[in-house]
Picture 1 (cartoon, helix red, strand yellow):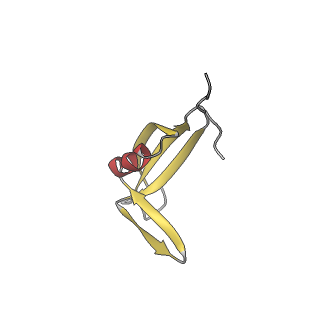
Picture 2: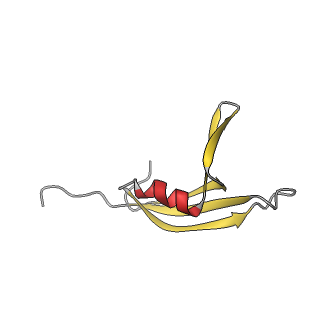
Length: 79
């Protein structure tokens, strides 16, 4: 679980949509599609998103979208 104020790194293959391979779901995003998904998460505050090139040999033409998000502090009630 991500604590209030905690920061999380996420990375997705560059693209749009998703696919199932060997029973696992893989989501692909661009900076814009990821921003759209995160905008629906009231508890998360996007800090930074960027695109990188895959560093594995033979995959230099593949890209990743990376993001840092921070969990918003818990809302205090009754104040």
